[in-house]
Amino acid sequence: MKIILHHPKRIEEVKGPKKVYQLLNELDILPETVLVILKKEGEAGDGELLTPESRIADDEIVEIRSVISGGAI
Image (tube, rainbow, N blue to C red; front, side, top):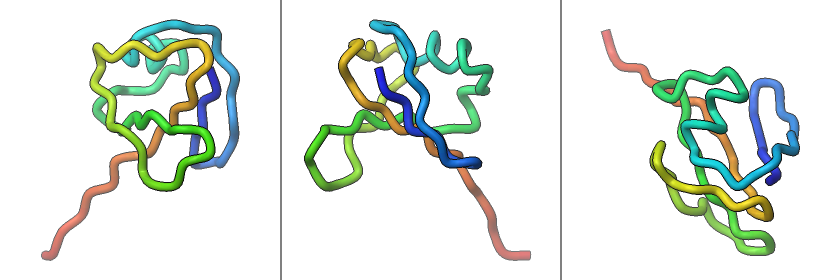
């Protein structure tokens, strides 16, 4: 599967299929810190938000985005 990561922006290739939580563990990423989005090749838009139990096929593309929060003082 193709993984699009940010900070720094890069693309990784990972063997699948596997569940989202397995992928994040393999990449050493805390699940609470990111959103994992299934991208459709050739389609515009944000894609489908995946849960930790979602299965990602070997031929799919996912984007991992950092969760950013903030607020007023």
